[in-house]
Length: 462
Ligand SMILES: Cc1cc2nc3c(=O)[nH]c(=O)nc-3n(C[C@H](O)[C@H](O)[C@H](O)COP(=O)(O)OP(=O)(O)OC[C@H]3O[C@@H](n4cnc5c(N)ncnc54)[C@H](O)[C@@H]3O)c2cc1C
Image (cartoon, rainbow, N blue to C red; front, top):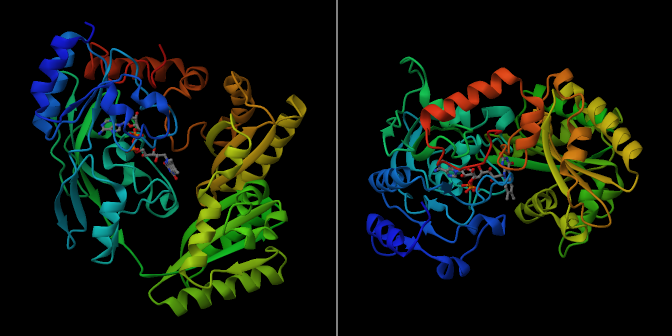
């Protein structure tokens, strides 16, 4: 049934004053990572699980498509919406319900931002065990729904490893799950697990219980150059084996990514290092600042002596540390060469050099005008591969995806590491998943969402 003035009035009544925003109000708001996120032009802001349930029951009855949104930082198009659909934003489910530093758990609404949980946890020497560049906007519901990974996944796993329990609303308005806070819970089929990584296709996550991890207060950060990826893997291996500190970040950057960012104000001091083909942003933690720093300096000195590391720059203060992270997290190259194609793959760490060498060759053989830019969470073998050219690469996603995904399965890798399938990787999923897997995915979808209203046309190939 199409949405009209009458249904809008009914929807508004379900969420109360200020709970339903139309196109005019949305025009004044930030659509997030993609302007198409607000394509529906109608957004509901429920303030409780009960309101989410009433909204979904209404939409189920009338077969209205529903797109859940959190911080709208997703990178696979999962939060895009179209006219005739209803966006359900979880922004008003933003309460921390319980923080238990003894059990090391937090229970919070799906709209709570990652940075909020981190700021609370650190007051008791704890951390959510998940961190990523979009921390100030990404919400627990979105992180769960994309099974986000990020900077600390090599230590603490992805969201699937951090979630203890969750509450969700099914398409017909049924509420399931209790956000249980225990690490051991074998109670038959773990249906709540299906919502982790489902990208809003099975229902809406409303509450999340997370397990927290100890957070060492002191960190040391360094930027180092390496001549090739074999050396980068050696650095990763050596630092993870050290007993002097705990390795906390291994961010890989190709020289062209760093060179572009070093052209930005305040980052020129790194321009010299950007001549190297590959750089690593390294961070280690220890119970005392001096221990972290001395341990990292010693480890890097040894690696430099063995010619594994080229140049090494230790962050001298917090401001320089922040600049080093900007060098990793900014995307100046995308502004200089817009219209790039983005891929997100993972391979076992030892396979990274071979995979990237063969990918570079495949790209050069296919179209020499294409240029590769790579950043990644190296310890996970998670590579964010961007392919750009002098002009925007319109309509070439699948053609280049075939080059990027070639050989991944043979080495035990994945064509979709941490950003989810959304719309962008749906065709790749259809191409690479087995018929049995696709049949089961469709079956689960039909069971949870028989009328297909939840995030229509996303993730699951037709
Ligand atoms: C600068 C930057 C850095 C990033 N770094 C990383 C990184 O290192 N690792 C990583 O994994 N990701 C990263 N991302 C991607 C993104 O931050 C994550 O995917 C994040 O988990 C999305 O959270 P969100 O609240 O913004 O979700 P949204 O973008 O709003 O939604 C993402 C998907 O989840 C669904 N969804 C949202 N909330 C709910 C809910 N409550 N119930 C059901 N479905 C829901 C949406 O429908 C959509 O399909 C990065 C993004 C940016 C912009």
